[in-house]
Length: 619
Image (cartoon, rainbow, N blue to C red; front, side):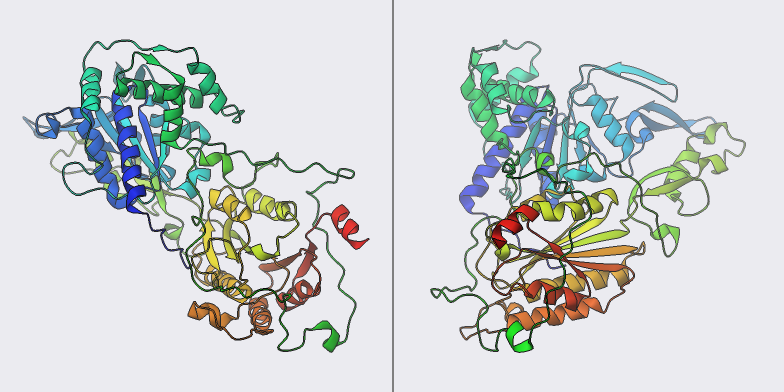
């Protein structure tokens, strides 16, 4: 799949992003209740640098040279024994003995850090630990004979991609009060990768490490301002207002203020990039209410017309002539795709409906060890896909009490096997032609297909044609998502139209995706649905899209012919597993072009506009 090139970040923006991240880390070090920091789209190469900065803030001016801050890394293979217990080796009269001691999350007395490189891939024991410890005043654990009660003081630093938020429970996301999008972060070389630490902040950090701190009292406008900024997030719970208030309290401590004011609340909102993420309300209906979850409305085939009358003559432009406008490569009109909200789960794809979820029937191919990525380990139920290292570690814990102490004895109850995430066996491919959205809304027409993908747990592949802000206007853009809850899908559905329509290139990308899915999908793709939303007008030939620059000569009908040829190639795939649908926006003239595409795809046509709107246009 062609990936969109990373957006160049100006030096001024990169410095401001580093400053915001340093401020967020200092707030987490100053305020004990801000124990969770979640960074969206942080490059993997910078995670260690950011973790070292946080550890330096917790350690004090002497830094790690005097007292190193313990670090615990949680991954997809983390188990309960890795969190709450720790095997200790000692030399005894009979050789090396093993004993159980408190684990990394229960042992440290002072500050420590817990680093999660990928929150979406974190194991279930790690998620349970995060829910239990983040923001808790006291924690208790009873596991394998260990009983411990302590006050959590660890700071959690987690990383997650914005498009993966639909895979994470909101209950877990709400445990991270500080959220920041750091895409494009560029740390500086040297001892201060995020910038110098002001003297006032160093003083506030010293006060935070002391046993007594002066109290801070809120101003009269403090609480109303917090509620005013979050009044459009009904149903989100009380953790978001508490998080915003605690960030404002931390900023007040950094300023050395005696009271927390509404200005500190505004500064906290700017720090995390808080803005209203609610989708605008739909326009009121002008006619009787109609259901939209039934079967899609199928348009009857158009009446046969003479070939010369039905098809535009060669050399005739499809679009009405207008003022000349260059459509070559130029500066992007905006980010591609858009992001930046601290709560991307609110805009993660279409809203959830009251449809019951069901696990689709699985059709697998190949050995069981080839099913999906590893997300953890568990007691083995058979001899397939064994986790050898975990098996040896489990047997080593009981070495001192077993008969053969001179060698490692592995019993059947010690066997551990991998837990693998199931791969989607269905796929929805959306080809969105933004240039056909002039006076209609396609959300209502696409809802049934998105609901099908959501209920069947299908993966989603989106191809965007003619969107504003594309890196190259004569080429289509494509991206993949694991489900319809991806925020990138919501951004794609709301993207405005551009100036060029590389429809042939978009269908070519969809063809490559479908062939790759049918031929190389490890779990065996059961069903694929291709949904094409277009008026059929393509003013960019396929050769121009491949070159990446526009020609000055007349295009004529070449772009349409290339799109029809790509549709014919798609129709030659496995028709028992591939279904094609063309959503017709009903634009005039050349209203028969969507029907021609549907015939080339061997698919069907679905009415794009609501019935009442189509009837009004026909009068």
